[in-house]
Figure (cartoon, rainbow, N blue to C red):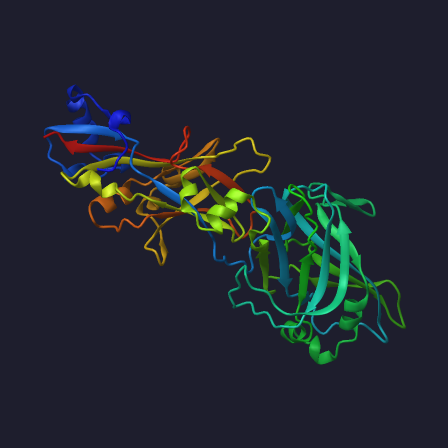
Length: 440
């Protein structure tokens, strides 16, 4: 049967058969009674088993979609296990009003760039440097952009800024405090380009985006040692996310104009770079880069930002029904955080999908309410109920091709976790089954 020794399988007492029958044949079928009608009414055994063979190993994620997400990541971070990750942003900008009248001989005095923080992952005591360039390739709002993509930009730097992030500190401007945001003064080059634009370039935002295609916002690689750096979360849709252009003309001083970063019509996407995982630790590299899947028996990895996913298989699951059909009452897939005291927060939630080796699909169990399917982190473990999926495999209605485990919100959250494998001495990854079978 290729299951582990049955000493950990518990056969519930046959004397309780009347109570069990009453429980499993209640008036409303629910996940706990799934498949009960597949076996004869008498005699029955109810079995608990946690020894089904589980095979798990981690793989690199190909890419994820990152255009027009709610939040955008920016920065450089050196994880002691996963190595370096950087996040760059490519975005259009918009005129706040079309056909602006800048007067006679307008000249830029300064531009103030501001972008609202929404969080971070990593070490905010380390300084970051970002550099801004003019994009030379059109972006399109109706185009899908993925994390591996970049666009071309002019090598002439528009601005650079070195700063220690303060994502939780409000900002005092004059006498008013504003929500936490990144704020710095840019040289006037971009402002002068806008002020001197031909009238045909500012008569609409579509014309303006042909004239100035957007900004590439790129981080320096400042992550020089494990634990250094951070990925910063920014909200481009916030009102404070803008570029204020201050200028004067022959008639007036102290004029200003707002350039919108937060327009919903701006195309924008994030590029993630993991540096080929050259700085990841040896065990990670051996499993992920050298393809030693056997290491997944001890530990597997998950990482957002088009990082790492984990494959899970039950190669001998069908041996459960080689003699008789069984009815799955409940199937729980359990994962344990290998280092629950790590300073790097694990994902609050994981995502689990079926796979037919070429595409992913939703599990039927996901049609139940979210609390039933679960996937939330309850220190130190994650749990999924997959009763319908397992029953489908045993009935031959679903191919036994396995599952994929991911972090959720992978394009907007910088999270990672290391999970125990299925052969660790304690808190192992396991499939727990309660099923009913004929007692013959």
